[in-house]
Length: 203
Image 1 (tube, rainbow, N blue to C red):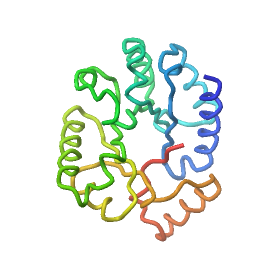
Image 2 (spheres, one colour):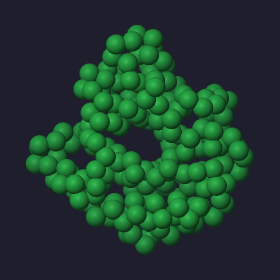
Image 3 (cartoon, one colour):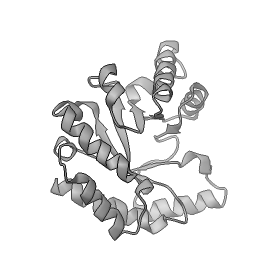
Image 4 (cartoon, one colour):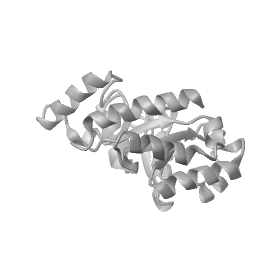
């Protein structure tokens, strides 16, 4: 928990440097210990307040297996976060339990498709079929769908055609220090980078 607290502080301090001039949210990963921490929503609210950020500036990500340790408590914690306005995301979807039963009751805002399901989507019809079905399922449940591991423009174009809402990967940008990211954002403002490719930043 102390590690997550520190990462959250660093991520929000960075986000405050470009918000609200550029409303690009940041994502922070949660561990199993965080998901069962009933004080988490309060801690997150305090951190956002300290950095002068609205709840929509933050998305908290967790992997499917993390929720299975204590599903009821996990759902309570996620529901508290969502009531406060913080988005929640299921990371690496398709590689863990992938239970359709838990998706029915899970208080989440987005699914992130693991790169193992998206890497060959422009060349493999079966991979494309899985992605398309996942998009349909997510949208039917009122969730947005993020495609991870997007490393080529061909993959990005195919995922967009299949209905993915957000892409994440080297085709958009490689991981970079905050100062470099601020320069990259400025370049997008000047038209040197396609602003449509920067809806989300993962930390």
